[in-house]
Image (cartoon, rainbow, N blue to C red):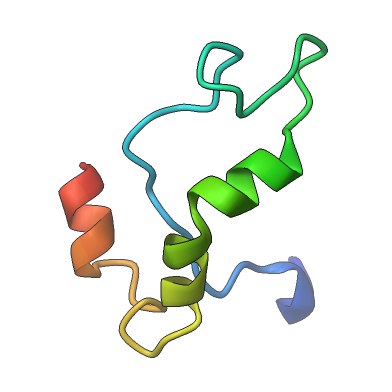
Length: 64
């Protein structure tokens, strides 16, 4: 039902949710993009590798 360009090609399961306490969202529940990019820079780069595109990759398994 959705065009292919709208479907995600990869995703990351993270070890903790975004909360105000860890600074990933602000008081109005908006994502603090700079903080997320800085904290998960290595994980974002990994998602662009062939291994990282596999949903069953080691990083996602470790987060579960």
